[in-house]
Length: 125
Ligand code: AMP
Image (tube, rainbow, N blue to C red; front, side):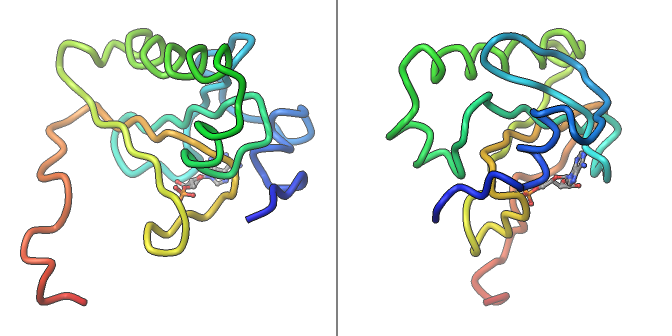
């Protein structure tokens, strides 16, 4: 999939749309999800035009890959989530219901999060 320069997270990076910032450095921006699905729900996005994890890891410079991953860890730390625990998740493509075509890692926390995926999925497809 080609990168859409006008996707909503590209516009947030350009400062065209506001966000509730949690963390920022040269490689990444972290901000609160507009429709939180947990008491803490933050998105971390790389500062570069990458649609998905596969696109990012194949095409981004190493400095950005490392810097972005460090930013995810720093964000979780700054949110105070390391000790109680948290979950990271990145949707990619149709099967994962990716809505915004700019790589983003969700950080969920603030309560026990339950099982990773719905059990008994075999009967649901
Ligand atoms: P995904 O389904 O993984 O692509 O998730 C996209 C996420 O972006 C959803 O959880 C949305 O609630 C969130 N989102 C969409 N627009 C905004 C926005 N302007 N600011 C913050 N979060 C947003």
